[in-house]
Image (cartoon, rainbow, N blue to C red; front, top):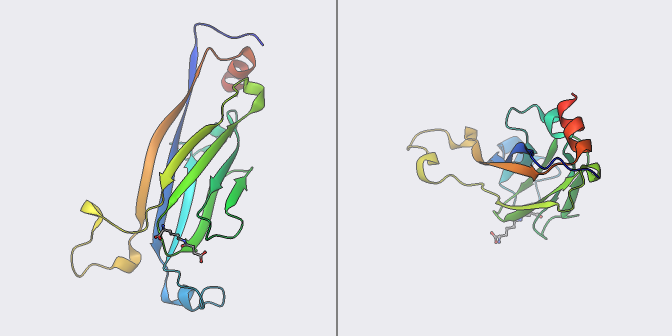
Length: 161
Ligand code: SLL
C-alpha cells in the first residue's frame, strides 16, 4: 500500500459517560425492583460535532469492557451510535477499544480507559435545596486519533465524502 509521506490526518473524538439517578418509577420497575441499582448511565464514543457519520471512514467498531459484575461484560458495538446504556450502583474503569477500519492500513487498535462517573464532585455538587434527581453528570474527554503518513486508500476515503 502506498503511503503519503507528507500528510497526517486526524480523527477527533469525544468519549466518556453521562449518568443520572434512577427515578422512583424506574426503581420500582420489574427489571430493577430486586436490584440495588441507583443510576442509569451511558458510555460513548462520539464525533465532537455529534455527527457520528464522520467517524465511519475511520472506525469499524468499538468494544466497551464493563465491570465483571455485568452480564456479557464485553459489549461489542458495530453500528452507530458507539455507546452502551446500563443501570448500576458503582463506579469502575471501562476499557474502550476503538477498532479502526482494516483498509486504512493501520495495525494498532486504540485502547482508552474511562472511569465511569456516577456521583458529582467539585463544582458539580449542587447547592442545598437543588433537585439532585434531575442532575445529569457528564465526564467527557476529547482525543484525536492521528494517522501519520496515511495510505492513499485512506486519504481518498476521508476526502471523497
Ligand atoms: C466498587 N469497584 O466496588 C467498584 C465496582 C461495580 C459496579 C463497581 C453492576 C450492577 C449489577 C454494578 O453496578 N457494578 O450487575 O447488578 O464500587
